[in-house]
Length: 372
Image (cartoon, rainbow, N blue to C red; front, top):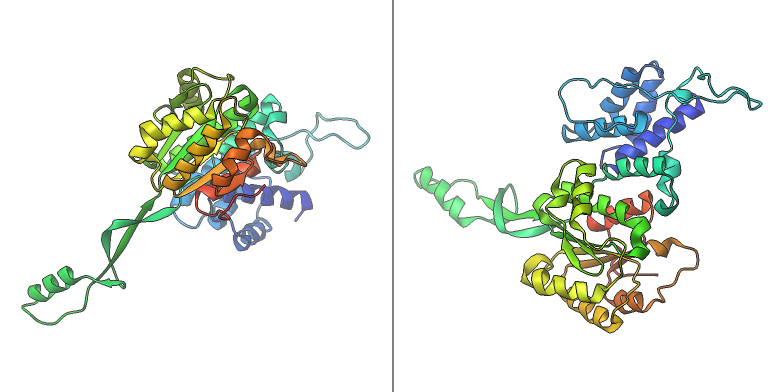
């Protein structure tokens, strides 16, 4: 198989994996082997080669359709029955010597060129309008589901703790005849996730991408996800970000936020969150994600005290600072220095790859303690 075709299809498989699909190396090899026997210029052959190898269960089908549409056509796919009509985008390739650019090369490299791999590590603050739109589509595909916690409720299981009530009922149903012992185990449910996104002026290049990540988390976690914006005041955005369409959700959130690109009083906003919501239950046992650069215009001591209070309530505190990705970065600002001792995981969130890492932290793949 042509090297460019292989790189294109491997990039597509990585997109499926980033969205939560079962695109492990063995499945990728199976897809490439299938394409050796198919017409790589036929969109339907490419579609079915990937669908039959990269999807492990019915839940993967809708995710696969979204990834295929976003990767090859730039469109947003909707779940539907049957085979979706797929049109592969053809990209003009310049001829050697600088000529041309208007003719299409006869090969899959001209039909499936994608900037996904290039964009994954690009700082979103340095992207152009078209690149931002592409990254926004890819963020919408992220599976930002939360880790699971043990519930107090029980469910019947083949093994585990003895279930006396079910065992006795089964014995009585059989007229007192001894039957098999029945067992039960604790159910599990998603852990609550709370996201607080700094929308102040210093965070304006990153606020849109971070709010889109919050929308992806709200879509994945449903009622177990709460979203707030923080700047000069605290705004609850959970209802606005429950729109299924990302652009509609962002429009609703923008209309609800009164302090876009203002100052930062993170300590005061965190205190308000804990007084009004966190102490009553939203923060208890939750994974709390704070997305901010730590430029605190208020009292850094207040921020440190509220972070300590939050850390006592939450299961885990994750801080995403886009400036962390810069070479030589050190958390020297007063706000960041005050907050960091009370943070479990310290990440960047400045790019698509960093947001994928943030999704893994939310899902419970944290390192356990913050590090600079």
